[in-house]
Length: 389
Image 1 (cartoon, one colour):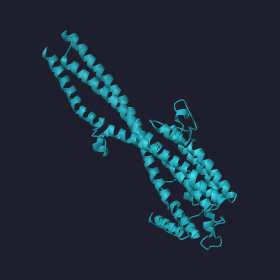
Image 2 (cartoon, helix red, strand yellow; image 1 turned 90 degrees about the vertical axis):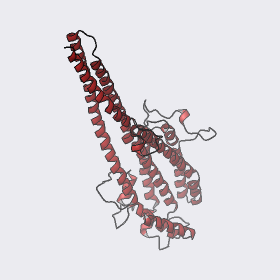
Image 3 (cartoon, rainbow, N blue to C red; image 1 turned 135 degrees about the horizontal axis):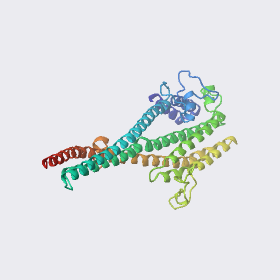
Image 4 (cartoon, rainbow, N blue to C red; image 1 turned 90 degrees about the horizontal axis):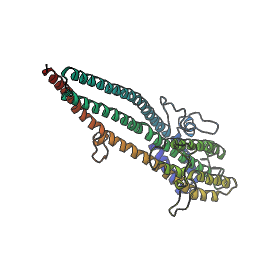
C-alpha cells in the first residue's frame, strides 16, 4: 500500500512538472500494484495480469486458499472469506432454528396434553373443578413456550437480516462501485494513450509494457466485461430489495432489469428528478451514453472534446451512481445496526443503540423467572392434590 501511494505521489509530481510521459509510466506502476502485476507474472494477450482478469469478471473463480500479489485481490479475498463464513453461519442458524421451533411447538403440545390430563384426573378424583397450582403452571407454560416460539421466529428473521439481506446488498453495492471506478479509470487511460498526438511517442519511458497497458483496443474489450459485471451487481441488489429507501437509490441508477410482482420496475414517481422536479435519465445508461461519446471523439482525433466530456457530463453521471450506491449501502447498514441493537442490545453490539438492551437479553431474564415458577406451581398443585387424600 505504501508503495502504491508513493507511485501516486510521483505521478502527480511528474504531471505538475509537465512530464506527461513519465507520469504515464508511474500511473502504470501504481496500477500494477493494484492488480498484482508484480514479480514477472504471466500476462494475457492484452497485457493483463491474472488478478486484473479476475477483477474484470467480478472475482469469479477467486481462490481464497491462494496467495495474491495485488491490493485489490487481497481485499476481495478477505471479503469472500467473510461472505462465505456468514453464508455458512446463516444456513446453520436457519436449519437449527427450524429444528428448535419444531421442538418448542412439540413441547407446547406436550405441556398442554400433560396439564389437561392432570386437570381432568384431578376433577375426576376430587370432584373439584380447578387446582390453582396446575392452572397457574399450565398458563405460565403456555405463555413461556408460545413466547419462545415467537421469539425464535423473530430471531431467525433478524439473523437473516444481519447475515444475508443487508450483507448481500452492501457487497453488491461495493462490487458495483469498484467496477465503476475501474471503468472510469480505464476511460482515463484511453485518453492518456501513448498513441495520443499530444505525447512524445519516442520518449524512452513509454516502454512496450506501458504502451500495451494503455492500448485502446484492449481497454475497450475490458469495458464490455465491466459493463456486464456492473449490471449483474446492480441486478443482485434489485433482487434483494427489503427496506424502505432501497428502491429510490436503485431507481436513480438503473431500472429493475428483471421486474416481478414482488419487486416491480420503477414507477414514474420513483424515477430520478433534479431539485426542481425535472425528470432525469437513469444515471448508468446516461453514463454509458457519455462514455460512447468519449470513445467516438477520441477515435476521431478530437481529444479535447473527449476530455471535456470525461471531466464534465461523464463524471457528473458517475458521481450520481456513486452517491446512489452509497445511500443504498447506508440504508442496509442502518437496517443491520437497528436489527443488531434490537436483538442483542448496546452492551453486546457495542454501538449507539439508544440504551436498548435487546429482546434476547430480556428473554434470558424472563426464562430465569418463568421456568422456576412453572416447577414451583406444578409442585404446589401436586401437594395441594395430595392433601385432599
